[in-house]
Amino acid sequence: MTYRVKELFPTLQGEGAQSGRAAVFCRFAGCNLWSGREEHRSTAVCRFCDTDFVGTDGPGGGVFSTAGELAASVAGCWDRSFGDGGRSLVVCTGGEPLLQLDTELIDALHSAGLEVAVETNGTLPVPAGVDWVCVSPKAGADLVVERADELKVVVPQSVDPSTWDHVEVAYRFVQPMADPDPVVTVENAAWALEFCRAHPRWRLSVQSHKYLGIP
Image (cartoon, rainbow, N blue to C red):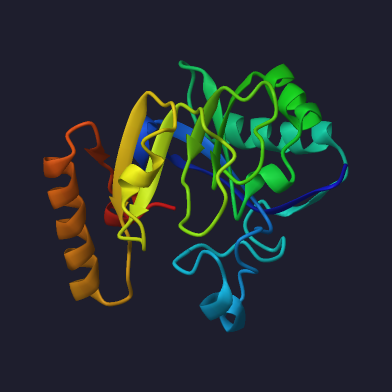
């Protein structure tokens, strides 16, 4: 299988249960809920994405002809960027990474010494072997992933996050939706805070990488 990657970069995980952990982000091109093009946003299932996942022209991105080639690129990025200690982590994200992430690539990443995490919208089955699954469901999309390590709901959406209470997870987060208007962003954060107060089984997640100015 050929893998199309928008960008590949070292950073610290900025969200959710593994926030603050060193990681290589592998952002796959493409998504099944939005084309990534602004002219299609108003009719997309997911309309609030703030990520560029179109094409393969980002830093470290490209078209990888084999799983081994991509795994070697991920491992090389880790080795160049981080010191010794701890298990190497790759976060497979997008777009929607499960359009491309398969067992062959998972096995190749494991063979390269990497722990494999995925951030998915939950509309596609998760292949066997993924070490950490973060599912971020979207209103209006059918959820097929009902067991994961963490659930992260961007809020507010058109449905209450409790819609997804049936998903079996260790951690539940609501994360305020970013908006070009800072007033709206503050309002979204207030919404999330009130939800956590009213539903203590849920925790607050913030996009700390944006505050820290890292990718």
